[in-house]
Length: 480
Image (cartoon, rainbow, N blue to C red; front, side, top):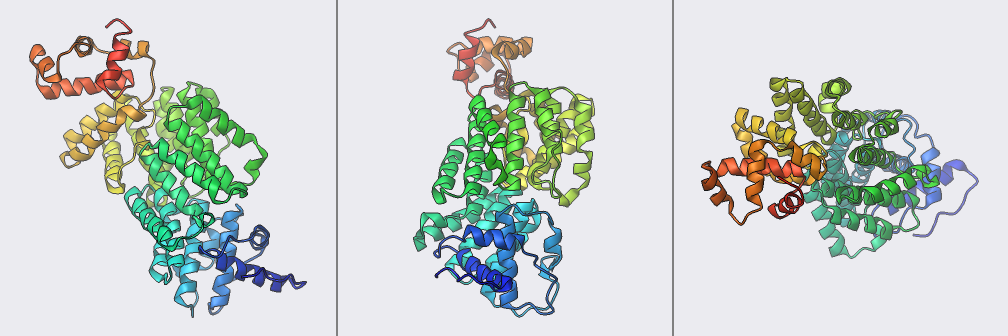
């Protein structure tokens, strides 16, 4: 399709820009023009019409996408509420199914941009239901992947992403048509698995997709920061996050991506022990409704490292009262942080209650490592023991969770870790450096194999390792 001719009539120019943009929202037609998106992002959508027609719905669809892609989100969710109520248009509609699918996909993209994935996921599902062509299906699946990933519904997000990828290969669309929403959604799934390799791949794909798009470039930068953090390259990640947060490119980035980057910056400072600076970074940060980026959670993570458990609880009380209005991805992390704080303060019953709620969410949404990020192994290990004791049906999830803890637990120095070992653990640590198997160690110490495994898990956590080989490397370098 050729570009629309310029017109001196603002209304005509706006309609032409909307028609051109809507066509290019689906793969196979090229990308929307930056000047059209800028024009549409500034336009006033107006009140709901008496009757929704295809032309009116396409205009709103283009405007919603333009606002999402130009970070023009001042009206927040109120803009969606002007036209929709519980997922349905508030006025009668005579819309074709393809136009309805496109409108719902635009609403889903806008909801993700403002940080309401709980609602965006619903609209994405509606868009998929009305989709008739491969292009419409692909667009709906992309927005669905982002909203589900953002809300920690990882199994469903991964399934939607797989369907979108298969469709893309079958249709042989151009690389520039890869959905930005799809890539960001896949990023959340990769982060939940602490898969730094996949995050680096996603960042590269974001750069290749539209190399001249500053919004995608910034998203690629944020994704690389996340990859470096998970890979343990804290110094490099911190340097990159500083560059992005203080560069002029920050002005052309997505709100939610900026928020995620700010949280990552704080996490990396916390990992380096720069607690005061981490809190200072978050001092003026305000969470948008929906808490897809939750700054009380970020502050609580720093406060827990500082041993300010009471403040962890006080600062997150509002979040837990939001119930289903709070993003599940960040809520699970809050519940875990609160459980640790309660346990340290002697409130075992409240700690168990909070941890059980967190584990149930982890079980329901497909699992994630992020709730345990930088929390000392000994804290989460004890909490998981309590959960398994009080809620036996969660034992399989607890067992699976234990396997990931050493990869994301709070780092510690070798000296600190060794000094933290109990006398019993020091005896066992000495035997770990020998050629004895765990079964032989159990016989030597006259204890059960399960007891040895439990003590070994504790030692690994305190040493910050995930294998016997790594533990031996530390133990042989320091007296046990």
